[in-house]
Image (cartoon, rainbow, N blue to C red):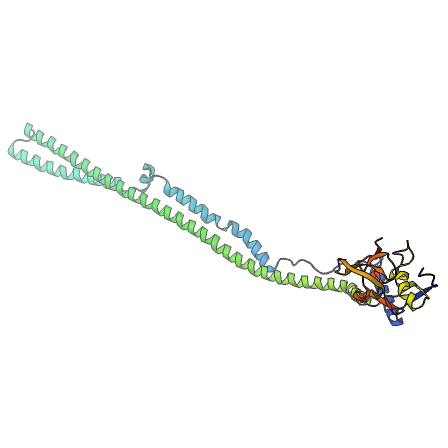
Length: 354
């Protein structure tokens, strides 16, 4: 390899400073402690749900009572409205007729009878004086007088009955109207009871809800504090591990280089970075200095936007694909004056194309 030059194997080892190695061990021990399978689960001992407040309990009890409070007035409204809507019957009217109507009627008829008797007596006295008492004329006069009496009595009785009926009818109608009005009033009262009761319960419930929300917020805060307390060791460990991850890591690299002169070294360095045919990819650190390459052409980009080139090393016709060390300095190290690339730190594969 490298035109017969002697190849020397070299080993480069990077180690962490003692303080950094100690810190890495401490973080590892912390991680082992909090991820131990034998670690006991710590349950939360506080309340998670706020109970009903005094106002909510009162509202709940009041809601049950209020659900039935309007029923008596509503039933009274229904009964009175039903009675008021029914037609007036003769029985209804008779209930409102004056109980003294018959007595008044009889008194009136008796008075008419008495007056007629007085009139008849006067007529008889006159007939006696004229000698016509007991005669045909006197009999006709008596009959006519009785007929007139019966007509007057009948008319008086009819008038008294008609007035009594009209008064009873008016009283029955007025009573029906009062029943309807009372039914409407009771219905309005029942509706107001429901509305006012509902408004009172709503206010009571809102006051209770406010208290419960506040109480629940306190319980949630306590539970969140408990969770943060439980996660604190993990957060500390993760933070420390993140810092440690940004530190350089210890590693050991192996390389081969020829002991040729200056002319041969330019050719040998490139090929030594690759290795013998059939061993491409066997090393993580390869010479990739642009000064060792010819025919460099951009062929693409990696997922992390690193340029990928095709090239051949100086003094060789073999074609390869990889990166330029000068463009990936974070993954490059200097060796014998030229840059080598650690491909394990890149998302680009070094490969031979022919």
